[in-house]
Length: 218
Image (cartoon, rainbow, N blue to C red; front, side):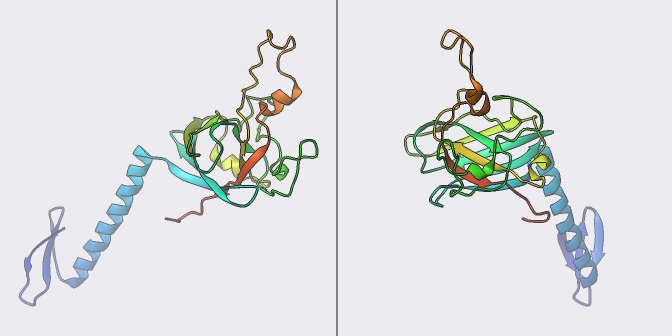
């Protein structure tokens, strides 16, 4: 939009895409049209070059301290998972999407005493074993300063499937995830039942409920 002059009564004369308009009413209409075009352009740009965010989670340890953030988005027909973490022990950590959206540190695994038992098992749409659960993800590498980040795209589920009646949660574990890779030269029978369930990732040290993005939120 370009102001090209003034009418005799003092109203503006503007040009928008070759269209000449005069008067305050028309100016308002053109400004509104321009704002709409800008918003539309931003939406198109997001669709073409970015990902539409569908959910997120604030990740906290058993003391309630925030140690990370998870974002879930739809990108190119796949689900994009982005995690950033801080104040975690250095090294590799298993992290997975779990089947229930409840992160209660007082809920203890009766077998191990690990917190966040309330988050349930790994999220899985079918009867798979680890590492083929729908919610299984590559290990998270945490640096020496306690920070880490990772971005993963998966076609094992659509983001909308995380928001069922039970919800879902992201859980970070204390140990690396071996992806159930136990060669038979180490164990004649290969991975045992526990490995096929969790990848031997150890205790749950942090958890975040994945919440759905509210439509229209900036």
